Amino acid sequence: MNNISFLANYIKPVYVQKRDENDNLRPYKTAMVEIDKTSHKDRILLDTLSHNWGVYNYISDIYYEMEDSLLSGRIFDNKHIFAITSQMSNWDNMRPDDVLAVAQFAEKNDMNELEYIQVNPEHGYVNFNSSFKNIGSAMLKFLKETFPEKHIKVFPAPNAVEFYRKNDFKPYPEEKRAFWDA
Image 1 (tube, one colour):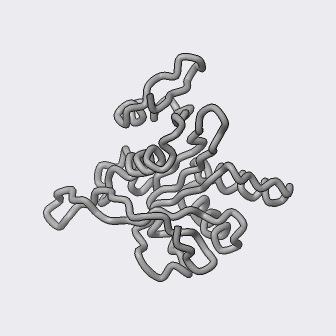
Image 2: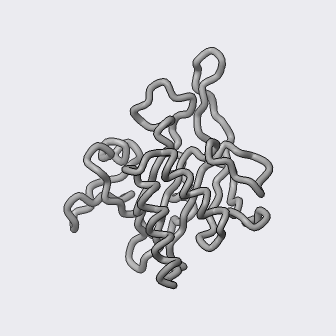
């Protein structure tokens, strides 16, 4: 990973889809970054997103869990916060409006777990007029490629089950409501 100033760490480009001037979806290069849980600026970014995206979204859970772990002195090295952003330069000032999705991911002994994933509601699955598409799928693809040694488990909200099925997640037989990338 390349360190970007004192903020998030740039990992690699990821491709989502973006509508062109003719309303056709085309591949669009974005950046995958890992949020630095100890960076004041990264914490401000997540706090801003939690307010901008609405208080009843998973981004708020990601932000408050990160803050709680810092206040209690429990920094979890096995947890990662990843973000997809359309911002491709000026990394010392991440712009909240350019963040397309955020995910909290935990590396665990038996099976990794996607704890939260939140796509900017402006570009979410149900917003048919969004200029961006397949953002959540791009996040899942990145996680599968980056952590191939273990399966990824998720406990989706009932309205997200179809999304995970479309991304090749299957019901996990040992736990109710769990899915995994079998």
